Image (cartoon, rainbow, N blue to C red; front, side, top):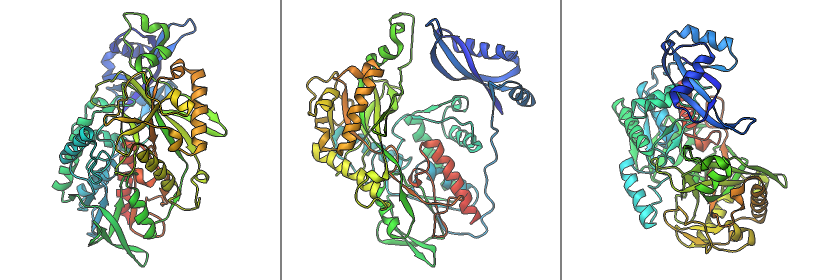
Length: 529
């Protein structure tokens, strides 16, 4: 175990070891009491005199584990890090034939645990291995020619393997410690165990997914690429077989659904087979690109004029209530860039990413509008009404550019209802290029109204949003799925026995760590069935 010492206030201009000193002093601890320690999280804060301060949390692993509990009981600013628990499954006595559909974080960890416990899972994914996938993604980014089977969203590693990934805090679920340690085993830096929001680079993620694949195979599992689950056969309320690539039928006793939200065709296929699902609240977005220097100036103020100050890219968090809807910023990335998020050639979608520790001169953020199932149009009780709403917007975006380039305009152009890039403060970071577009041709009127009112309100809260020359690209439509698959507490789906669902496609979680935890819990459900 370990402890987190929170609310450690220091001057901004100090080194990491001085922050740790301050944390240990606060608890009357010495360096010799600690096996290892590091800054867990740090944030900027202005005191009542306007001076810049750090408010930090410090991770400390004490040499006496019993004293960690004592300290956590004694001080309300100390949190005990939950101890990792053993992750295992009972021996596979039934010798059931188990398939895992999808090889992103949820599918990888479900299959890894099943394989290591003797269940011999068969993993299928429509995309290819990470090396083949990387080559085709690089070709796409340079040529604009998209492979619908093997792209930034489909294939080994899932939809986030081509970007640096921030992992959520590990405190709260002991499975996450297990996941982080397994990631370290396959190539992640050890620092992910002692940071609040550790980051794994794209290159490290590629090593991790390869290592997990090799372990699955070494432990008796199979990993098949270029094999897409296109249907299932159900008899007497139980799954009997899976259909692969539309023609190949194979016996199946247990099925773990772990595909990503981008596989919208899978929702349609599963619905026709009797899988119960329902629309869910959703949000749709556009992505803004400000000059990083403008955002830094707006957030840091006069501090950035000091030559001795070295500050990280500034972030922000803005929210407005517009006609009963939430309008808010999301995934703010200082030094980030805009990348493609679509997976077929009749749609366009974008997202913000950080890659390979190379900071651009841009700070980018999604600006999102909340959308309720009643807004989807058509039959609001149709489980796929949200996917239809999402797809219509993405198809209209494609019609606006007639290519894999993204629709774009400036903030001023958007507010004035024009397609204008002539006075943009900087070129878009979207690698395939952008085409001037009027967003009223892409989004429904209620979304346009919310975006416009939100931008005007944000300009009153943060100076950088006064800049009408900032670039907007659209749509950011793949943040969460607009549908969820109904399931039981053991992750089995409703009405059909021996099918389990986990990860992003289920509609209950987001992010690499949450998806991996869901994969483990789905594997546990399989073992108990």
